[in-house]
Image 1 (tube, rainbow, N blue to C red):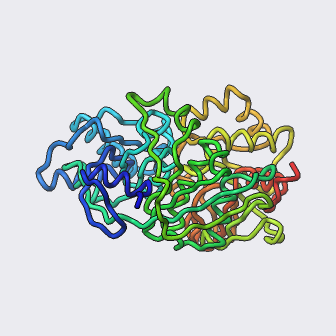
Image 2 (image 1 turned 90 degrees about the horizontal axis):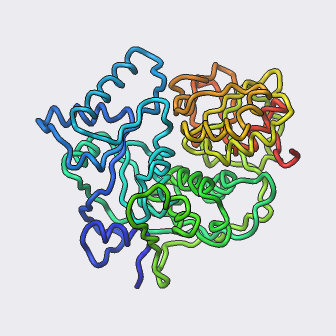
Image 3 (image 1 turned 135 degrees about the horizontal axis):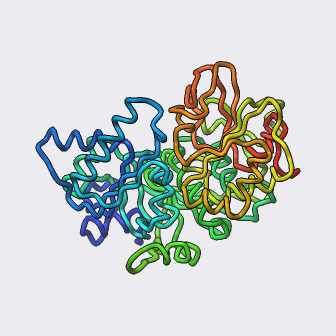
Amino acid sequence: MGMTLAEKILARKSGKQEVRPGDYLTADIDLAMAHESFAGAYLNLASAGIQKVWDPDRVVVVLDHYVPAPTERSAGIHQIVRSAVEQLGIKHFYDEGRGICHQILPEEGHVCPGDLIVGADSHTTTYGAFGAAGTGIGMSEMAYVLATGKLWFRVPSSIRFQLNGMLPRRVMSKDIILHIAGKYRAEVAQYRSVEFSGPTAGSLSVDGRMTMSNMALELGAKFGFFEPDEKTIAYLETRVKGPIDPIRADADVSYEEVYEVDVSGLEPQIALPWTVDNVKPVSEVGEVAVNQAVIGSCTNGRAEDLEVSAEILRNKKIHPRTRLLVFPASRAIYQEALRKGWLEALSEAGASICPPGCGVCFGAHMGLLAAGESCVASINRNFRGRMGSNDARVYLGSPATVAASAIEGKIADPRGY
């Protein structure tokens, strides 16, 4: 019997011919990523008397969660990180302003199909969009990886979402993953590997695939894969040094479950407070006024997202009661959006164009919500208190839905724009 993508990668990295769900193994790590959390991992190493990492070239550190530093404490953490990467000889360090970690890694050529990547951030599943096994780990695990280059895993079972049909206009990959969360619930992939496949999966852009792999985590997934294809290779070949191996699942593989998802008649989807799987089509949400709208994050701050938002908002104005914040996912995307006029269109509509960063998504700074306020955002989570007050309400939607909602001052259907 064949192996799934997760099984193939874990077998390769543990030196085994074959692995099966439930097996325990120790695997070699291809890449370790940390953001501000690197300060804690470094201090753990120092307290154990360890003064070097297993391979400085296989460690990437990105400052993105508290940028620019909003407090003296944050500035101090940044200072620890900068000192640590210099002391440890880590060359792949991206200081504040370069972008969000999950955008920076593939953009800068650190992700390749078949890689096993661990990150001190839960949405490390994003790299599955390139056929890499990416998963989040804790600070103590990260310290162990930094010291040894290895980590233990239990091989997950695998489920498959077969995506069929053509997406309607103004319906995006974010709507697909929200629909899946709403229909199959947030624990459908609990400690499982997810594979997104089928003709619709193949039709999605690299940006769209990254959105879905990113939010596979919100289904409970350990990994969230798309099989590498010509789009993957075209994106990576000018970025990655060395050969690209488009690893694929075996044809005779057996999945724990296969779910058929037809997107042909899919409406824009909204996740209502306070869980990602509390999902309704936009037509069933009703009148929901929004004080704030946010386009950005590691889920939806990419070029495709800004382009669609700019198309909808061009020559229009945001509603007087709604403030719109836009966070490009990286400096490179910011610059592309400048060259192509997307940021100009968004700014003229009334948006505030913010530096690349994660702060707004989890309520660190730049866009926190007050008690009683409502926000529609293209981020990945809407838990109570996620973006500020426990008494604020966060709704999740695609960038197209957020842009339309900013115009109307309420949650709106983007298909009319």
